[in-house]
Image 1 (cartoon, rainbow, N blue to C red):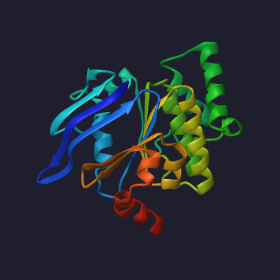
Image 2 (image 1 turned 60 degrees about the vertical axis):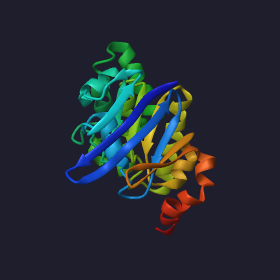
Image 3 (image 1 turned 90 degrees about the horizontal axis):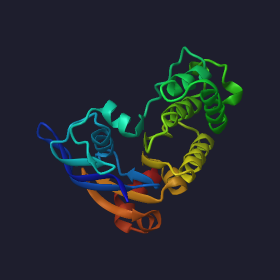
Image 4 (image 1 turned 90 degrees about the vertical axis):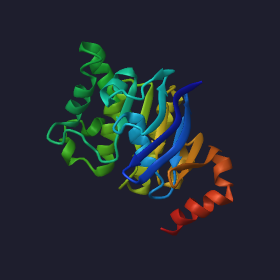
Length: 239
């Protein structure tokens, strides 16, 4: 069953077509990775789905509801939770308070305290909960923001390059974190460059190239596609 259904979506900026006639389906309960070389249109498509850009053409449905013209906050209220590429935690506040702020609209009292502890433990941040968020490593700040997104208990978690700037160990831990909450039923859409990470988490993959869908399917099918290797995988391994 489709949770996100993008139908014939295009986005033009003046004379430049960044996304061209894209169809994309994200099914309930899956981890879906959106990959492609730089300039493929991944970030533009992500911003169209979360409502930061209006499409030039086409429609976007979430849980069978047309959200094409809805603002980002309305999409969040419907059950989307968004983690952009750069961490945007409250750096001057303690880690625990960041989680409390994220939880305050949904829970109170003992329920909030219990969920606070669960999230801090899940994120491996319990021992650092009294630290200022700005004192955390880059990877830990990314985990904290993922936790704040999870605090909304979304139907869909959208992650834009969640492992950017992370060490290989932090990247692996992030993958295990995503797999753990996907195992509890969370649907996840990830824009990512790191193919080791994609191999770790993806159940379905869509490849964008020059603003269009270039390939889609299971991780295994994408990895075996020589045309995908030509436009993307070979370039990635060369870095």
